[in-house]
Length: 151
Image (tube, rainbow, N blue to C red; front, side, top):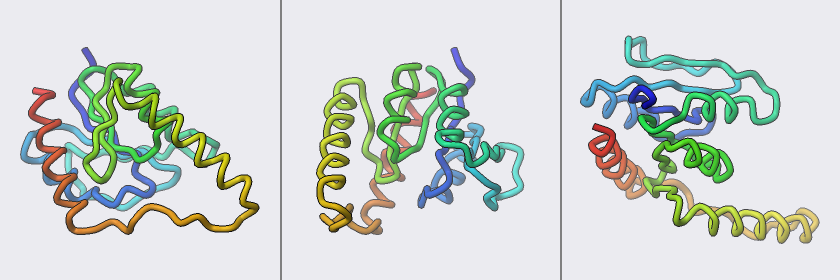
């Protein structure tokens, strides 16, 4: 079994503070992975890894470290699929879990939306709703639940 850890796709993650607090409460290591250096608390449970700017470099680092004892935090559906395949638990930054039962539909929806955007020649079709206090709260609750399951 992989060591218990939280792996964070950190470049655009809006819930890092919530992750740090939960990690300290549960005494579980956090590994931030990003293309370049990100400021983070100096604490023995928190490490930062710069993966470089190559396409999918951070994703490759996270996937290599993921396993049954890992909780991965990412909004990247394809990375979520890769990590689920290695036995990791995966949450997005709004607290929604990616699961073996849902990931196929999410990957297909992502592909359809990419095709639609490509066909619109740069015309906007909207995007996700802005990140809210309710999203932050939902994430904190889902994170707590996921960490209890890792124990």
